Image (cartoon, rainbow, N blue to C red; front, side, top):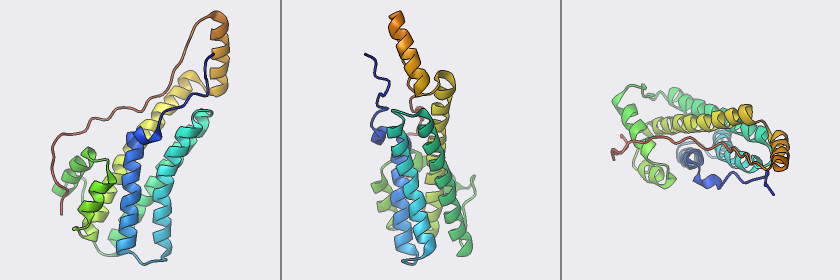
Length: 204
């Protein structure tokens, strides 16, 4: 018998989740190193970063029974990324620090390097010897890349929903196909993302 409550796979294998872990661990490192303990913004930034990865996890799990829930939670993750990016931009502005222009050498270098690394340990080690200005700018780059990946995943799930419907419709198709002795199974997959191969170092 067909299993229409099929697993969408291990969330830890999703590139979007791996990048979300980099966002979370990087945000926690930054707030606890450079911001006041107990500050309201500190808590909000850590909560926003946690929301990103948790909603990707929950969306992947709930997606086994509800396509709508999967799409909805991915959209919440995107909103949390936007909120966190704004917080890092506010930090730079309020502390009279510079935010890198998108076409600057430092930003372009960071974009290339961050596209190659989805392991948060890499960033924590790199952050140990960098200034808060540099770290905040690198975090903005990581957040933007996580936003891109999460949006691609969101669009993939939404497209699959528009094409194949939700779980009730899938259950109906499975029932009909069973009667007709045919099979039809469509699962949205995480889009592949091409990464560079240049092993540069993050800018200082």
